[in-house]
Image (cartoon, rainbow, N blue to C red; front, side, top):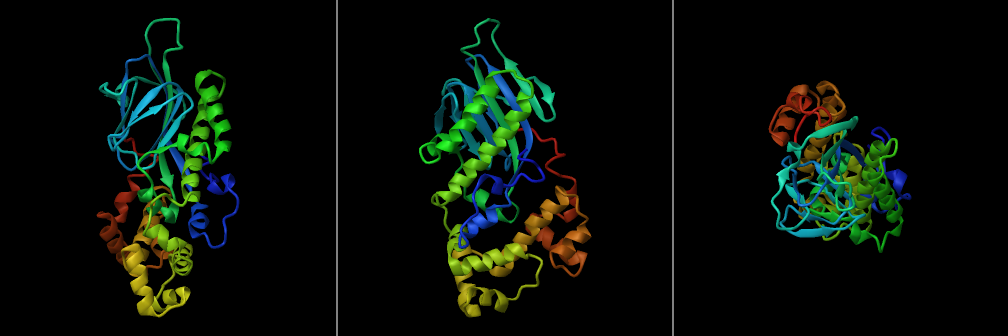
Length: 335
């Protein structure tokens, strides 16, 4: 819900250095909130999430502690005010004690609050609520546009606590989330959803600013000043009929040197990279923006819809028409 039309990471950061292609291309990042839940539970409890892969998950602990059993099997204690982003989702649990079993969150009764936000309560019948856990959870669609490969390079679990020393400015956001989670004030649900999106975007930006962790390959290509110019040019104009000679000229080298360098760093040929880039964009335009297939084909430089459809099927395994029926905003997928 980082304003679904103008929810741009540029509102959260200063302009990037001219040579920092990662930051430049990341400026187009958006987050689409699919589903949010405010969960109030009396221990002992266990909640299972993430049966659906590829959706990002965000969890904020308004009152803890709560334990996260991450997709890799690691257990993380999350105290009051802690948050975590799982950029690729994956199966994981939130439990009141590390050894407890977990029950799928979708089996609990969710009471709609507004839009795509709901409340789940499973509390003991007592007046004292101080021992009840409060959690705000979000399931999100990352829209990184042409930067989609960045998601696969991110850590499986991104804990906000690791950022506080370097980025103390995130603390007021977490404090605001805690207040809104614990107090039933007017409009709290919508405010929480927006704060969740902003904190998630902040976590991603901080990871990029810290050098993308141990990520290499594709990020290394972007940070290589000469090769980065080529990658940026492809992303800026994916519909252009690029030739190997033109791409080599962007890098300032011979075609053979360019082709070898490109393959060594990215793990694929320039032609394959451009095709996959085009098909990622096509999938987003067709499924999310409802763009006509013929229009997408023309924008991406294909002379015929048939050629475009063949390329789309090679990359995605299904024809472009199938993408139209699986829009992330309309699909009703649990997890």
